[in-house]
Each structure stands twice: as structure tokens, then as C-alpha cells.
Image 1 (cartoon, rainbow, N blue to C red):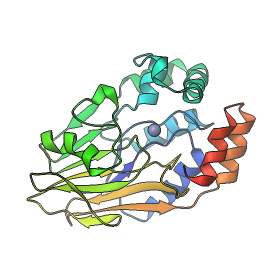
Image 2 (cartoon, rainbow, N blue to C red):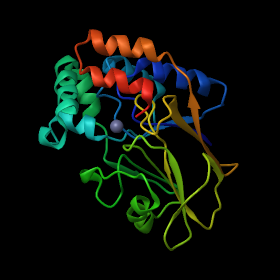
Image 3 (cartoon, rainbow, N blue to C red):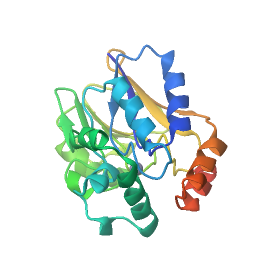
Length: 242
Ligand code: ZN
């Protein structure tokens, strides 16, 4: 099974299309999406429609979905993110809201765990940047791999029972006697200093995982954010990747 790993699209249609174009040649069997399809970008409706067409096996809710649905207090968000939540809520249809309502906070099957933030407290949406942040999930993780998003900071963390270590680079061989947490990074608003869209490929049979980056038309995404009247910082930061 080859999985396409997507996260934190944040209404960025240009970035999502570039990622899916790159994945077209990858013989992907199924997609896993770990949340925040909406928020910040100008095309949440279009991004929801595309994700829906990919028919992911499970859909995971991010804090932006929860904010839009009213499950997360607006005080959770900073001033600008709050504006994005309110704007998004205003333009989504009833059917789109119902679709978001079907998303789960966590998914755990035989081999794969999915959560937007961290598995120990999924409702708190904790961030995974470093190995210390990965440990609370890895300590209770029953599956070989977990995929998370939320921090917009891609990374691969490996545990052999004790404290986890961050793997050098953006790909690794999955050893069956260890456990892995993979932060996929963000398609629509990377924050690790690399403005290219981040996404992943997990080849379960080959036992490999890879995080990849792809260029997209940042200027087009920026103009739409400005034209929509969303906070201009959302546009500016796309070029910086922060
Ligand atoms: Zn996010």
C-alpha cells in the first residue's frame, strides 16, 4: 500500500494542486489527511471539494475545522487566525460544514495512527516541533507509525522504547521493531523557512517514508488572500515560509 500524506492545506488551492500533480506519478493507493483543510487561505471550498474527491479513508479534524464548527472556542486562536476562522465559517455551505463534522480527532487502525496535534491530548492540539514534543504521542502509540500535522514543521521521529530521536533528513527506512512519528508539515502554509509545499509518501510494503517539497505559484495564492480581504500577513508569510 502506498499512501499519499497530506496536511494543513489551509485553503491554499495552488499549493494543493501542485502537490497532487507531483503525487500523480507516484502510484498512490490512498490518501491520508490529518486536518486543517481550511483557514488562512482564500480557497477553503475548493480545497474541501478536492480532498473529498480523493476519498481519504479517514478524515482527521484540525483546530481550524474545530474552530469553524464551533467545537473550539475562538479565544484559542490569535487575532488573525480568529479572523480566518470567522471568514471561513461565513463562506462555507451547510453541506461543507456537515462534511467537516464527519472528521474525527484521531484514527487508530492496526498499523497507522492519525492525529492533527498529539495523541495524548488530541483536543488540546499540542504542537510537535522537536523530539520532546513527539514523546507523549510515541509513549502511548500502539502502531508502527503515526502521522501528524499542525506545527507546519516537517520531521521524522523514531523511538525504540525510550526517548525519541529526530531522524536526519526527510526520509527514512521504517524498521519494524521501532515506532515512528512523522510530522508531514504543511501544504498551504509552511513555517520551517522553506516556502515550498510539504507532503509525504508512505510505502508500507517497502517500509519507507519520505517528506517531499514542491514549488507552487505563491504569487497567485497571495493575490487571492489579499483580494478576499483576509489579513495581509497570511499572504506575506507564504513567500517566507514562516
Ligand atoms: Zn494548521
